Length: 244
Ligand SMILES: Nc1ncnc2c1ncn2[C@@H]1O[C@H](COP(=O)(O)OP(=O)(O)OP(=O)(O)O)[C@@H](O)[C@H]1O
Ligand SMILES: CC(C)(CO)[C@@H](O)C(=O)NCCC(=O)O
Ligand SMILES: [K+]
Image 1 (cartoon, protein in one colour):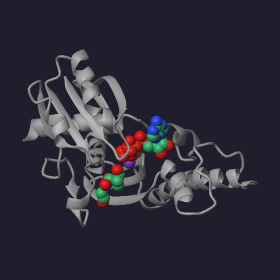
Image 2 (cartoon, rainbow, N blue to C red):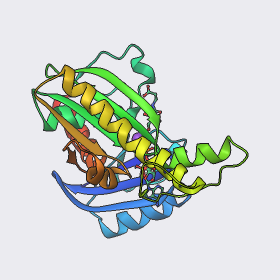
Image 3 (cartoon, protein in one colour):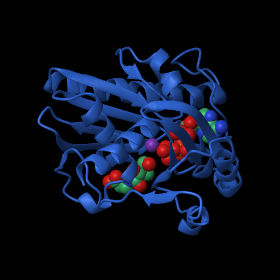
């Protein structure tokens, strides 16, 4: 059994895998990391390895405290990935994006793939049919958009996600919901259209905290899987073991 841990910008997600099957998934806050790992390892005593991909600022020691119970692996740029990295600044490419790209490459061989992760940030990652990772885009996620409007203006209230009824917002609140939520959906549909115009034979994978909402709203049909990063972490680790 493998315990995978995705330290995101906001929250931590973890999952226990038996082979390629996910047994259980957990979501928790950063300050509750050790308590949660402890509980997970109590429940799944056959975990042999803990695999971490982190884009957040978390102390490595929090994981190393479990070294006497299982092997700890921190995925980095130095690890083996199943694609050719054509990013001009490969060392600054987020490890979460690399793991998503690895999962897409392994799960959907020999086709163009676009992965959209709608989390704290929205990331777009494109791997072509010859397994070249080309890059993509980074933009603010849904919650970040609400927060930015409030934090960088004098008059705009801090709202939380609400599906707008109209695209013509007829009040401050409705205008903000329309701008944030519709803008978010239009952006993603717009990017997908752009990729579709330029590439054929490709698959779109949608993941992240806002994936389920988006899947309902996008005009483009896509493959939505909110566990895709955790599953990709498991696969990237298996790939490393098999090929190192
Ligand atoms: N309980 C929650 N806490 C925070 N965000 C949530 C929650 N439930 C849903 N969301 C939505 O999920 C989005 C954040 O996604 P996610 O949880 O994947 O981010 P994250 O933990 O920071 O991970 P990453 O850094 O990988 O994006 C927010 O835009 C928000 O709308
Ligand atoms: C874009 C985020 C914040 C998304 O989690 C992360 O992948 C990251 O910190 N990336 C570094 C910059 C880059 O990927 O080019
Ligand atoms: K993200």
